[in-house]
Image 1 (cartoon, rainbow, N blue to C red):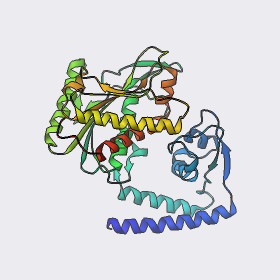
Image 2 (cartoon, one colour):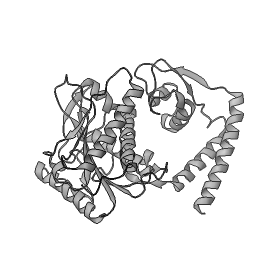
Image 3 (spheres, rainbow, N blue to C red):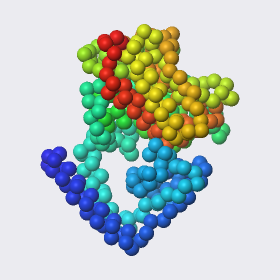
Image 4 (cartoon, rainbow, N blue to C red):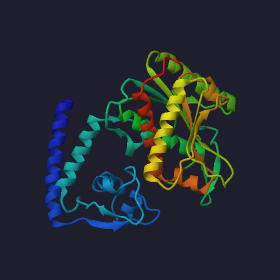
Amino acid sequence: MSVRDLKNTLRIFLILAILCNGQLAAQDSLIAVKAESGDGILSLLRKQGIPAYDYFDEFVALNIENLRDSVHLYAGRTYKIPNQKIDTVPVVAEIQKQATEIKKVIGREFKIFGEKHSAVVSQSERLKGAVYYLVSGHGGPDPGAMAKYAGTSIAEDEYAYDITLRLAKELLSHGATVYIIIRDPNDGIRDERILKIDHDEVAYLDKKIPLNQVARLKQRVDIVNKLHSENRGKFQRLIVTHVDSRSKGQNIDVFFYHHEKSKNGKKLAESIHKTFQKKYKKYQPNRTYSGTFQDRTALYLVKRTHPAMTFIEIGNIRNKKDQRRILEPENRQALAKWISEGIILDFESGEIGRIR
């Protein structure tokens, strides 16, 4: 069956599902629930006994005008809860199942994102022709910055990796070529607050990550520079993601570094920075965004990698406010989405000459 046939079949399935859902809605109206402080989409659905992952997309579709950045609830507002249709209308469940399978065929499957998140459905081709290298900080024998949350240890590398995977999926959905340089064979995108610490990450092409810090950083530089050479002539960018560690009392915004002599690196960092400023102004109008972008050439990866790049610090893992930013899966998704929008802005505005 061709892709065109699959798409036509999907349309038929979706029309049937809509008709069946319409018949069901006439019999059974949607319930509405008020979101409490601390609620996310997943937790709100679970409180109502709804399979959270199965009904996540339907919830978003029902409430899209009442969501912050398509993923966040507003405390005190009322949200529509999807009806569970599997037991009452089995035919709808079967139609939805078939439609999901067809969507997966039309889209692409990437096992690295984990079973629940493996399907990448195209949103656009806005990044077609662009190549991105994504490096999440630390990994393997080095967990990076550590902190305690609710008596449990949390590690920088796990959260930087989860955000990096979510970013990779966003970029792929817009037609980019993406290389994930630090990889975990079994973690995938995770929707828990506490991400279990392990040490089985490897570098691109299953290379063991060295214990020695300089050797570890050099390995990443060598991998990125080799790939950069292989993709010579293409639009290429590098994004490095870290979580900072400072005093517990220091709350910081997301900020960005670039090479002092890289005009394209500065433009990339500035594009993402502008996107964050815009998002904060829209969603947090009473709070000033204080994150910055600046050159910091002394950093090993900033100084030695060849593609134009930005080095992102997501927040302070030891600060309680910043912990909420990285522990909530919806927040990690929002961060990835905002970064991807800044990357698209950078790509669509073109390169500055041919300088790094």
